[in-house]
Image (tube, rainbow, N blue to C red; front, side, top):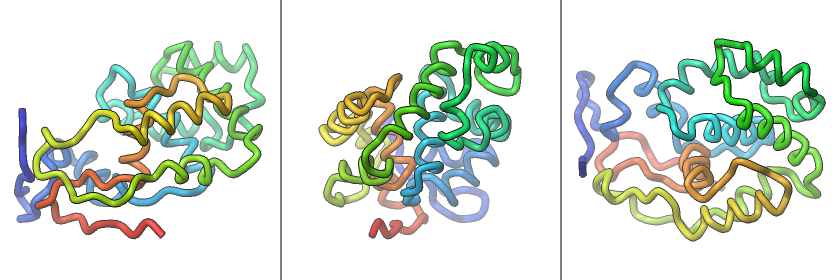
Length: 193
């Protein structure tokens, strides 16, 4: 279904998905699309986008505090040291999504972050496409782009797993590399420099 921005009870026009729950309003208004360049922030978003695969983003948002506790506030140096006992512990943690492949990917990706020759932010932001007009409707928002295909390929070449073009595009949206707030949405365009 193709939808344009919707006016909420507060009189502000938002992307339609940003109105369904208080968690979505908060995330949409204050975080989604804002530039994230630091290693921990990018590693967290990359991890959460991977865990979201096949699930509702709302499920991940509601479990975010538990994910942060389970994965040492997404400190790659700590998570890279997780072993089989940690995997089993995490599989028993009802606060997170208990998926062995995603948990193991989180650990592998922490090591990949540590093994990078450059900061994660440099690798990710090197794939920022030129600024474009905001989409008018949800139908105008792609699931993947040439830039997200290139980002996924670069991350996989650097040792990251459980990352494809769609997850890479969601990461680009979440971290401000692209601005997919709808044209009529009240959230101002974030500076990316």
